[in-house]
Image 1: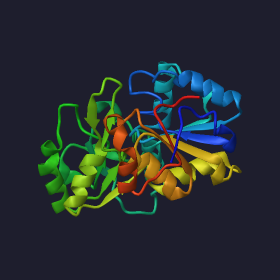
Image 2 (image 1 turned 90 degrees about the vertical axis):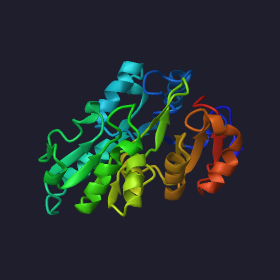
Image 3 (image 1 turned 90 degrees about the horizontal axis):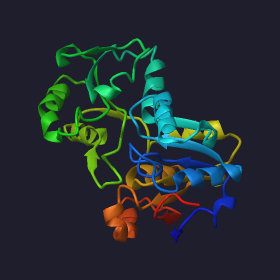
Length: 276
């Protein structure tokens, strides 16, 4: 693992970058220092940029947030979210008997993720065909609040679709919030069936490479702050990866090499922040 303070020493090796959002570009409410200038440098060097997020919402919605935070559309080529991947997958299930009724697990702000599709949200678990898990209903909830419902869903044999495999996110202030991946892991421990969308699963990288064609894998660099998602996914797909230590693992930055070995996800580079 090569330690970097910025991308400029190695950037000539790559034609395109896959950039995580939360923990690398922003913390959900503000950009990390220096990010905008770094994006300008990358675009000035002719690099393609795809933002790749495990956000459980449509890509257009994530793009609007970027605009609000000051990231102009000319600074990137595409946005892909785990919510978008889930939407598109469900949209294509014409010949699969999934059922059309789902029980929603998540906050009100993301309840529109399937708007426009022929699926209907129901409020009674007994009326549902599957669980749509996008996260906790509020920041005050814990995994314990959902155990009774998860046990009932498992007893009914309901599959779960998880639109955010992350376990947690962190803000610049250090505050940490649990994500949908926690509930999905709990459901799997109950022997419930879970289909995930987003990193670290191969489908998201396959989508990105189609957008970048004909750029070969060895000319693509993936940058993220999540070892088990961003780094594991990129390395598993055969991409070079750079781990940003100033995000989710900020308090464990001194243990980064041990953490990467533990998850069998060793990046090519380590850097404190996204910087030029």
